[in-house]
Image 1: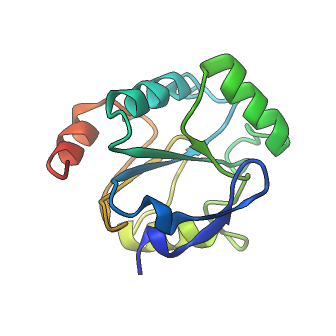
Image 2: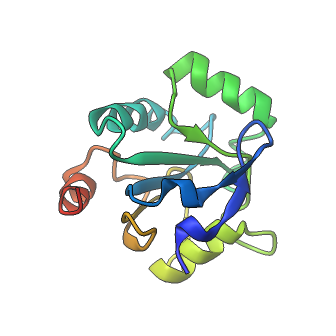
Image 3: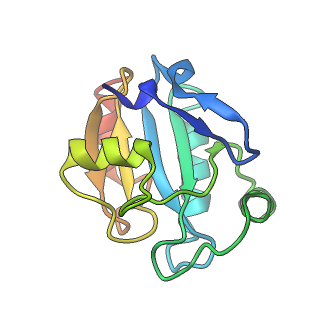
Length: 154
């Protein structure tokens, strides 16, 4: 099993088969628009642009931490695109832990043996969709902890 075995809803409600991402590493992040870490949207976009098509960023809005993502998918998309010029992939709002956990996060949490404790937790997966690393909210997208691990696989 890998990250790229899942079909999930994108921010516009369309089914997206993650198998199309096979061959590229991905950074998977749970997002929120009303969080102290929300400025990381900007660095996520910079990360995406830095690797210029060689790496995907997969953003999953989540309202489980402090109710800091109350908006609809349309409102979240508008916020991310107008405020931070986001062009990386955004998906429909999900749960990243608990009873209604998304299958994507059930897989990632199981592989990492940890679940997000707050918004902007990051998982790095390789070209085959296997976990490379798990990083708490405080680790920014362009932090050397992430980039040095990623660059081993590019």
